Length: 251
Length: 251
Image: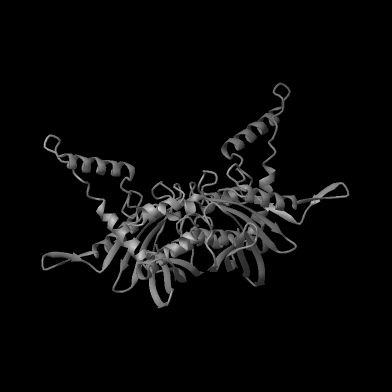
């Protein structure tokens, strides 16, 4: 019953790339009954469970800063050594408007979730209007980087991003990082110092670092800087507690 | 130039009730040129600047807990003493999808804000889908209460409210409280302890209390409990710094 988010997360990542290949149907006349059945099943599955859209890939709303930083980290996800392409130090994490619907345990978990629920950071369809972001992780350095472009629907102080929207991104990035390191977690504490407001429409960089791990506790620190790194906008620490899926079901 | 949010806030509240009365047009045949011009100006103003909708009033998405708590605090906004109705200890604060567009300084301020920007907590039109809330303030007790119903678009952990959405409501309620007490402020720190997750669709109560005021600093504490008060979901402290409008323009 209890399964770590590490397992689910792997499933979720696998699915991110696995579904990019569609099962081709064998030609009609020569097809066996079994092949035909497989084709029908695949088509039905594709109809019932359409391929989720990875929302961390570039779209037309992404500005120059967002694109430049995306391309920088994306280029470090694959390196060429002696003419051969190898996985690089960074890895881009895909992002959907529901996480667990597409996880390994999704079929079971989806039964306990309202079907219309949507991940808070991905709940607005209009591109560029709210949270545009992409997360990269560096396993060796135990570090995460998120490039975040703040849309016009995130307003707090006039012309600037709401403190709650900044807190949301910090919770999401640090939480993703803690999940990557420790499996399924819940946020126990967020302590956020707002140093300088962020203008609506601008792109900022969130960096999260592992401070320490103690039993069920994962301590992460996070900072938000301007796209060129010259201005510190926000600093935060976060504490996450490891839990199991049965903890969630029993919540 | 510099004006406190206290002034703007009063204007904002005044407008909340002031705009409920529409200017009647005098009858055509007997109208003077001046009266006709006034009528045309009022009609044009009403067309260009339609009456904003107060989003803190009940709608069909509000569940029994939300309605019960709203009616409880609303009944305390007006009390009957010796047959006469008097203002009660509590006051309901109206809420719009843009704050400063409708403030006293709105005409000036709106020039510096992207016209399509929307307040983060009011950026989704579909009733009941995201943040449904109403804030009441008690001047004498220096206390604020917010009744908050969490919609299905605020998901974080499966079936539960995102930590960032909870942080957003804490920032909003404590920030509204600090503004009420100290005029224009910006969030400097949020320290949030998540004790127990909040189910999607449920109604919770946020209470904020003034801890102390020191020069430009306003210290607020806030707790989030279940609708019946039996369960503590979240505890937080918040620090706000007083600023002026010129600070915002220069941000």
